Amino acid sequence: MNEINFEATPEPVLPTEIPVVSPAKGCGTEGREGVKSLIDIENLGFSYDLGQTETLRDISLSIPKGQVTSFIGPSGCGKSTLLRCLNRMNDLIDTAKVTRGTIRIMGQDIHAADVDPIELRKRVGMVFQKYNPFPKSIFENVAYGMRIQGVKSQKVLGEAVERALRQSALWDEVKDRLSSSALGLSGGQQQRLCIARAIAVQPEIILMDEPCSALDPIATARIEELITELKENYTIVIVTHNMQQATRVSARTAFFYLGELIEVGPTTKIFGNPSKKQTEDYVSGRFG
Amino acid sequence: MNHNRHTLRAFDVSLDSLRSEVLAMGAAVTINLERAVHGLLKGNMDECNSVIADDETVDQYEKDIDELAMSLMMRFNPVATDLRMVISSMNVSRSLERISDHAVNIARRARKILRAGENGKVQMVEPLYAMAALELREAITAYADGSVERALGLHDRDAELDRAHKKLAKGISRLIEEQEGNVVQLIHLLFVLRSLERVGDLAVNIGEEVVFIESAEDIRHQ
Image 1 (cartoon, helix red, strand yellow):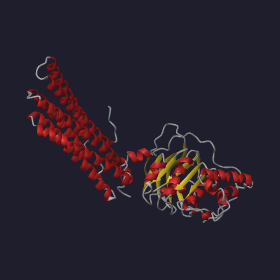
Image 2 (tube, each protein chain N blue to C red):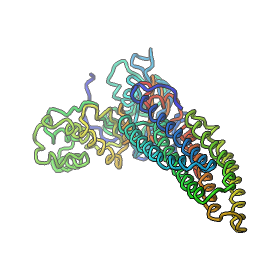
Image 3 (spheres, rainbow over the protein chains, first blue to last red):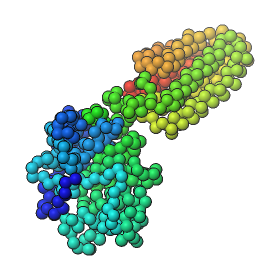
Image 4 (spheres, helix red, strand yellow):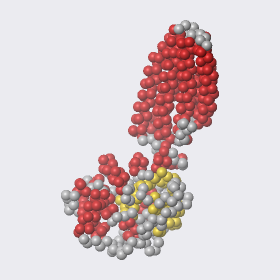
């Protein structure tokens, strides 16, 4: 893995105003004229082998601000690959490259020369399938991102950690043991801690790659409840194999198959009356 | 109707069972209605009594279908066409149960008419029954086949039945006013005609559910 430069950068390079844009052409989004779109993906192609084969082909999709959008599809369809494109996590793979198209976040092309991927990943946080807290204390896990940005004040750190843990519905469970190891928490708690870690640096977007697949049903329900609360303040994109989860937490759903976007729209439409037969067959368990 | 099979075989088996139960209920209701009218036309009291007793079987069908549908939803979380199929099957069963209630009403009225003595006017019921029975048959067939065209055709058929009902009801009302024949019997006959008119309406409701299953379009109240 390439060494990541954790030196603080003076100013963010992403704009803070969100332009009102029309949905990307041909992406099949449904929305009112002037709906705020936070992420615009246009004709995106992606390869893991320097362009010899394309894992993603011609993806055009807009992700609205302040909503939860689900990516669904059978294994290997490219949904996690696309998710990782949104914060350039795939940059860490030497042979991976965007072969064509653009991804714009708040109107800014994230592959532009002046975009710092580290700064991007602060604004576009990520939670992974397998919870991965650092082998540090609960407090230090949440404070880590701010420390490497140069925040030194214990008061500021303390307030931010509390805020993040409260937002992640974990504060009451850990407030009396912030200095204890994060690895002593249960699986569900560790995943909520990872969410707290991501939101401590105040991102605009949270990417979640099957965040509940390693959790029991009760822990899953708590994470889903948390997602419902978090969407008030963050835009969330979630990859899930659990279609009932997609119907419970997301307002919009995008269905992928073999590297292509087949259909995207309101979750009620995708699961209620999808336009494409392939979508209907997948969501109703007729293939995949 | 999506003819592709589910990966989970049990899902298909359950959906097929649900459909079969609804069709069996449809057959039972059709027979009940036929026997109620037959009992009236032929003056057969026993037939009328059987219809009243057999309504219990139809009620049980409704409960079984509800139970089957709930089990399906709990186990398989149906979506899209499957979800519409399950919900609409419950609604169709509701309509069929109400048709059977009308058959019971007809049987009860028939008993009252028959006890009051012979009445040639009962034959007035026959053409309206023929239209209502045809509508019911078409509605059940539309559900079995998933035929939107057949389902939509029920609207025109029902309009015709409504016109026929209006004409017949007017005729009987005139007889009541002119005190021609046994007025009490004639009043019962009016209610029989009304029940047959309602059977037509309920057949249209079944057709609307078929359209919803196949196309996701809700054409109720149009």
